[in-house]
Structures are given as C-alpha cells and as structure tokens.
Image (cartoon, rainbow, N blue to C red; front, side, top):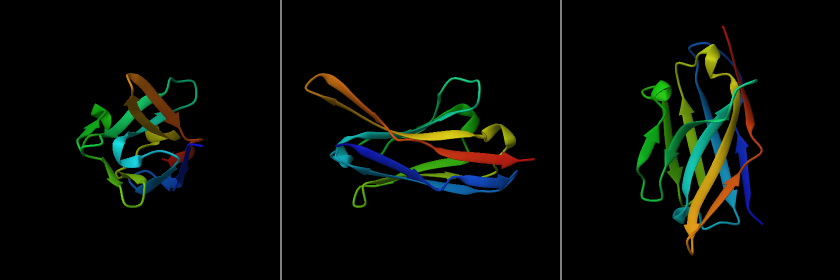
Length: 119
C-alpha cells in the first residue's frame, strides 16, 4: 500500500520560513519523480516544484528563488524548504509521486498539509 505522509505545515508570518517533509512508503522511492503541489481555496491545484529520480529540479516561476525541493533516497523522503513566504502562499500543500511503469503512469498523492501565511 502506497503512503505519502506530509508534515511540517503550520502558521507563519509573512517573510518567514517553513520546511515541509513527505515520507513515502510502498514505492521504490528512488525511481519516482517527487513533487509538491498546492491548492488554495477556490483555486485549482498547481505545481510548486518537482525533483526527478535523477535529481533534476523544476519550479513554478513564482517559487523560484524562494523554495527549494530536495530528496533523500536513503530516508524515502522529499522536502520543500520555503522561505520569504507570502500570504498568497497560503494553501494546502500536497506531495506527489510519479513513475511510468510498463508504459503506464503511476501517480500517488498524500493527504496534504496546511500552510497559512499571515500578513
């Protein structure tokens, strides 16, 4: 059974920092691309950042320079370091694992962790 468990969310003032973690089980972690997405109230879920199985990273434009995604394959964990947080970063942040297996994309999601940035 695949589980992605996020942690590290909370309430922070604008300009502050948070580090989110996502612990994965039930998958071969090192073979999966791992990502963070977020969904604000009334808005669609959007990509925050992805780190591929080979270690390449990609960020949404609004997060570049403020957020850093990283992974620790030994701990089956992906992290999102968020700095210079803004009220518009308030959202539920979701962890995602993706892998193409036998030509079929496999896509898993965590339950999400709330991040609230106060002004």
